[in-house]
Length: 301
Image (cartoon, rainbow, N blue to C red; front, side, top):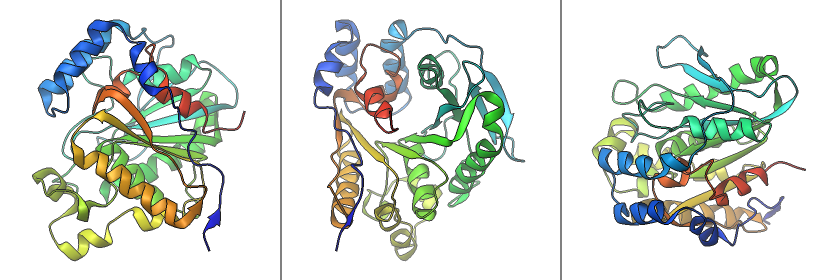
């Protein structure tokens, strides 16, 4: 029998209308980039949105250490003392690159800054990368960061019992792997997965995914996050871009299928129409609030 669980996603029906709230020049530039990937698409998307993202309203605490490795660092954006919800963001980068900030760009400061503007605490983390650190290194790093936050975030105004864990692209894969390995006690109140990889065995082979997950078919199947995610009892937001490579869209559908087989009600996918793979999160803080409205809906009022 399927388990009866709380609604996993408040589906924001007017996502296309939200995208239309962006200025025409931003929408045109994002449409021109389309489903392209790579550094030029990243830079072009960031440049298209940067003029419409407000500057952070708080001064962040940079490079707090949550572990021994040089990449075990996180940034905290806090509006002040309290017991506030905490949004933790795990960046993408194709398993072999990326960081919590990008020099010369507003990303990913815009995400933690948006959280602080809501009266939450925003946290951006970075983690070890393949090929030097293959699976499950990033999963372990997410676990270490969450453990550090549960022990320390109250000193920065955050409530360790109201943490939302969010990842995008490879970051969503790492968040999914973390949640799947700790489905019964994830240590967070809710989670959001944006355009991730959840069943690497059914994702097209690429040098970057092989660098992290390996090439052994049996291992790839065993490393699927889907069985663990199907046991997850916390609210879970699934989102994907309207204009991104089809394998990412297919992965979201596979996750929804696994969740629908395990629980009721069946979750929806937040369709971020008009967005490309990067603009979904690069636009956080702008007039397009489809994703942020859904994030706010993950926690009880």
